[in-house]
Image (cartoon, rainbow, N blue to C red; front, side, top):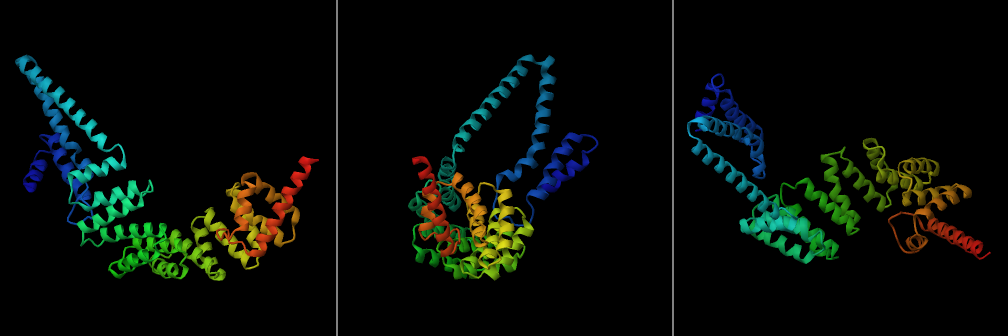
Length: 368
């Protein structure tokens, strides 16, 4: 049938060009959208563009009928017009009803579950797009488990559900369950990059830096110029206090995206912790130009100035920091064992003294 239709399309190029265009456009676009190459999903939208010109000859033919019966049979022409109006009302009503299902992620995937109760994807997407976002993690876990039960032999879908489940377990501090799932994922072949990446993210959330390093290495080997992979490896090595080793990965990130905040901070922190304060200051000043209200950049500028015995400059950056960060939040961050800023203990103590001294002076001025 396909061969016959293509032959008809070719044969009608000169005599009926609109019909030929509709047929050939349909098949030529399907060469792009759907071929013998297997695709992971069957998406109906792959038919939207190829099917576009199928409606053109139908509309043209209906218009021809209206013109043909305009003088010959006005009553039948009115019937055709009535049919067209009813068709448009019906299509419009159907679109309105369908839009109700598309109102939210929840209504969309619940509608898909009703229509395809044995499909795993609606369950998976309802858990990911709705229940995880609103914080109902137990409900999300339940849906992921049901999706696994419906699709037990899918090498991609199963790890996706299990990775998402593992990340939920991490958020619930159930690390053993998370590790068991990731061990199962990584024991399968092939291991897709997205699952390996989520494994690294989960390991970082657990602060299991050695596990994260083991997980990121294969990704770096596969895609050595990927920004995210290089940043993660630098971040993991930074937490492992391997500053010399971490620095090249942050610098590689800056070659890829020169104004990236995370890479600038990472490189600056490494230089500072290696004792190269002038180099660290230069990087933090660059970051400050791009992100003038970033509290972490200002905090490290204070520290680098203190390390170089430039107290007035340190006071200047501290004043800017206190304008954007509540004093209580800054004191809490410095006094508690907060490792997100990577400041060594001596730096935290010096800045704490500065903050408290500054606040005391302000109080004295107000009292006076």
